Image (cartoon, rainbow, N blue to C red; front, side, top):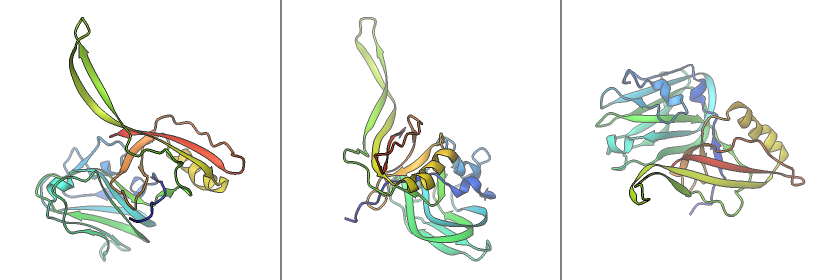
Length: 255
């Protein structure tokens, strides 16, 4: 097994700053602009089955080493088909960044690809399918990797069931409904250099919170366990300890 990657937050999504995001095969009420919205329930949807090109113009060349496709049904509609991610300096001569020749028969939670960084203005996500396709979010950019591993005791698979119970007047249980599965993670970093905090975490806090973000606890061995989360308690506390700074994050999202 490959050595674990350090935990990484993906928040600085270049799609959110793009000059344009277009797709000719988009349903009128599910436009391509939804791909840059952190609200998971807003999904881009193709208007017809078959071929689709999502074209992204960043306005100027920007460095990218990661693409994440989150909240999709491509495992169902693309079984045996393909997905390409390409980049270009001019919008017509394309080079390959990612190439998936075939999909599994069922959905993976996330499509995650990290490669050597490239700088380009234009990006193209191309795929074909046998049914209407849906995608909640495409992340394009670079992650904020923590400089150290999480403290022992971190559980990336912790979940809670959010239930609705109905009882009789005498207290007997009549039925239980699962509203949704809630993912909750507590992660501690006791030894963060002050320079990293100031150059990275404070920028994340000031420019992005309270919006959701993507969190990967080990992209090398478990890229599928990349989750869309938010800070359960958006509070900035990074005490010195005494040379390093410590941080505790309470992350919450749908399971």
